[in-house]
Length: 628
Image (tube, rainbow, N blue to C red; front, side, top):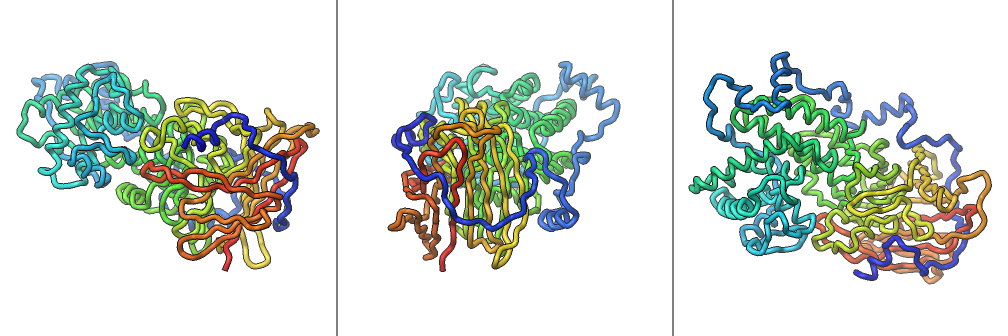
């Protein structure tokens, strides 16, 4: 693991060696056409629009005018304003009545299941977080405890409640939930102190307590039930005052979801509900782009927001109210981009820190959302292109956007122009992924390495990142603009989809722009690629710069280099095999790793073409083709 960490780090290495400047594998002729900025797609032709409408469900026809705050009367607007100014909800809801005892108004049935294995581990006395077991009795719940980020999220956000509830009946699970909750309350008596009171953790905890209340409050211990109710009210009041101080918009959205849920389920909650609904709609508008992708560009963040909205919708149903149209509209926008990052096996690709989340989990989330749709193939605002073969056996995912801005980044990765490619149940070309799981089985010391350009299947110049990778999941300067062009081309035997994209991440340091062309046949049997280095100024600079083209291989791929050193055979468990061919004088293999959806790292191999490239430019072609 240490060797891999050093290989992925963003330091200039001395392992690069001299190589050829031109590698010729002819690509089909194509008509030159003006490239367009990723953030400014060209208007589609009528026939193209018709084709896209066939691919997308009616939910994609929703427009942003549908996404507005629920209509309220003048009196309700006044109540919302008064509540925002600090007047208690009980005073506004029943100004002349004696304050009622705090109670929950309904029991919620969330359609979203948890991880049964993790729930069984809890009943056996262990937290199971990304494959790491930790005895409950040895966990320090206090504000000063030094827990890794995954354990902080699970324990202080009470994500484990959903897993526990999925593992058995209420009588079987409730004693464990109440025992852990009592230990947590004993250690966190002061509001606002420690990791437990980060806005996002507090919001997840409040939402979990409200949605899974029977697990916590169904026992005979009246004292514990009162403590939990008091803490629920205290957390809701704390979030009312601090929700806008979240670390980012995603944390704020979760906070508004929790506030709105508390307004629905706690007595005298109407003023809080009105306050929460307005804040939620505003925060969602700031979090999500025009095509439905969250601005962090993270599929894990996308899933988190969908899950929170699913739970909130369940809270509305519990009190016999219809969710606002804005929530249904947003779910309709969020699901298609997420599906765009699923492979032929239904699992997620490894993008922006995520791992290969399993098919079952994606299906459960989409089913719980109630949205029936197809993957969004051209999410230009979110920044991912998707090509699917006919029949749907091969899937290509291509990152054609700058990384997220620092204020939005979560486990931000320098992955511009990286791609993943799968065929059937097997992934051939992947990215390492998994930085969001660091602190579990993925060691924290390699977290930044997993976010580096070298951890992705793309070109690296000077052993440097195309965008600077900083601590705490943030990103610095680098790629500022990406041009992208997508079209259908005619080949000798059928058609193919051609995507051309370029980025300026190396222009300032090395005076070179990286342009990548990918062409995939419609039957998915062939993927051709060409990586070009183009001088960014009118006149190319003199000298050489080290380069490396990296292709990380899937966990079930067996690799064998050819005798001439210019190709490789990729064998799959089903007996099929693919050939990788390049015009380079030498194709090498190196160790790598790939992180699955449970946060478990797997040793894999990577194909590497490396050498010295002229600052005057260069071209490197390659071909991946199914044989037999």
